[in-house]
Image (cartoon, rainbow, N blue to C red; front, side, top):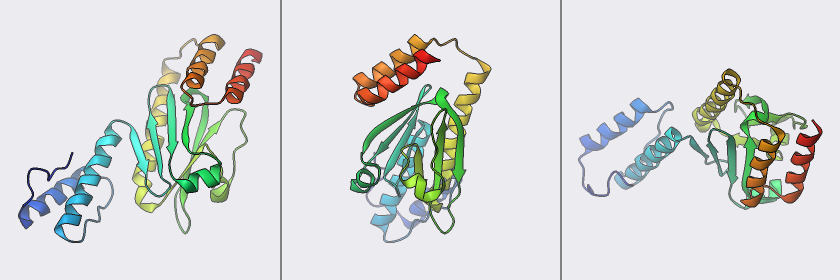
Length: 202
């Protein structure tokens, strides 16, 4: 919802105050320039971004990728033609948090940065070029560094919680979770069978 919906005409002082309030709760320098209409739109977008982050929903504009984190899964939704061409698909990818062995975060410098989720038994692509073709990686730019750090922090917190309060999860329970993902169309039949066989053979 727009902060300016019912207040189309605001003074310069009010606009300045809202920008100041936004900077106080934000972790990155907010570049809000242009005419008043453009500034109002940018402020709305920034508030929406921060609101979603509180719900553990993160959007990386540069790579057109949304990441949501719940207690069990990291869900990656990629949009746009470029993602489809690079990775061969768009849509949703679900990663079971308990299967993440480590998180690699490469800060952006001359090239884009990336977050890579390393999974047990998976070969992990190396470098930015590898990350662009890795479905378990997310590319981001300098202005999105705060989002990347927050994603890393939330997932590491989830992993720590699981280590502190270990659950006795049987292979059957794990298979049921993947079956649910299959029924929802998030993973393919081939991916489901691969995970099921891996769990049954452990």
